[in-house]
Image (cartoon, rainbow, N blue to C red; front, side, top):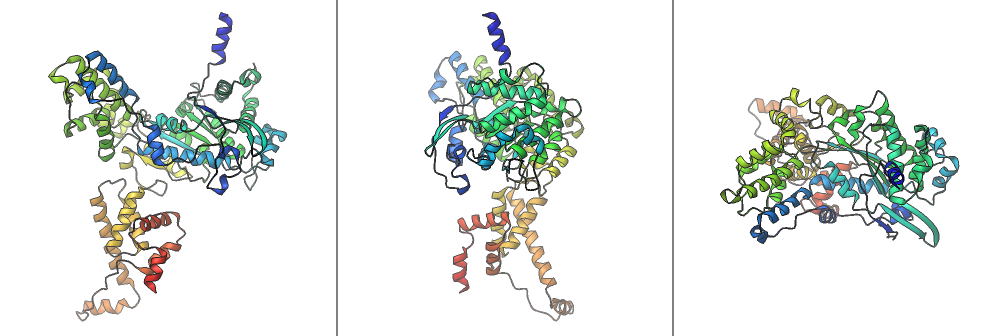
Length: 583
């Protein structure tokens, strides 16, 4: 019996890092034509709106003001709830949106009733992988992958894992099919699988982890069948591809990818090349999650797998002091179980940021520890003070103090040592250059990196600036160009007053330059120099009809999106309204 138990422990030494729910298949009508007649897509939940995401991923403590009057020991237990606190932040919505598109788009080419997909099982996945893809992107069975991949990188403790796990759990992990549109269709569909990168960083360890994880959620015996003594990685990789295709794996998420940096030469590249094969040849989407340390690795091989699916990588840095930090701390601060209420005054806000440096995990733990200390001390009506926060940080968070001290120093030479918390700028620059899609940068790092075409802009700010430029007489095209230029040149400036001032200077300067360069103006300039010209410049109308019509027909993706939003909010007329104005 003991030996059997030992075998069981050995058998499941690699377990999935996250286990979700299983449910019977129910098929839903699809509004998007490309998603129809595909059981893998139709069995998924409806596309989530932001309100649905927020309501399902938020985790708030069970809080009631009357709980302040309970006994000290009871209140100490209630404070423990803060450790599970999750406030939906912009990064959570971005991750869910990317994941939603990635899964569905990846399934488009993997319809289980497609002859090309079924042909792969007859050809053999070893041959499919070795055959690669042709000039049209099709593998030797005729499947043209629609899968993509993206990465989530950032500072430790900022909620990368929480963001991806919260999004994954919105979907069932396993869907059991039995019949589809009158046909027998017995299949266990795995919508997602999340694994941690093996600590030894080996590809063989990842294969074992994969097989045992599948066994643990489906009750199969793939590991015992295929992972025998002497099994090589070259034998295991096609087996993984076969199983992933058989069970319709929607997305494979690998967390803690920075462990690859400890591999011997060539090992990391081999694993990343395999992920690229999964995406490009087999059509399984892959998401990699890790700290800044993984950035150098992902600048190379995996960048080849970032197909043009419009997802883009996400960099999550610590919260920047200001609007986003205030939102987070205000929401957290209302959960107090001390006998007296401590208001969140500016000095406490500043002290919390100083001691946590905007790292969400540290801020939450610091607040929880401070309440415990205040309740246990029982001094000054259990008030939370700046001195108390400092004492708690020094006594109970000693391990992170050297890193936080380095962040506070803002010395680039010191910061480069802690590459889990701070990116090396030359590596970040290379990463942005090799990224196939625009990269969304969140947090403190936005205030430091120079904007370029690979960094997603703040669309809300862009819209506001376009509106401002139009109000000052610019045409739509000129307004969009000027607003875009201001955002590019001002990095991640959050002060809209400053941005508007820069914008007005930009459109004023351009208007003067354009007027001077108009054909026939040379004579006017000469006359002005002699004091003979009294002609004034004509002020542009607030709405330029021609420019608006050009904006409507413009094929640029960003300008179309901005135009549509401006129309929706009534800042500029629609095409029909414009036609009436012209008539």
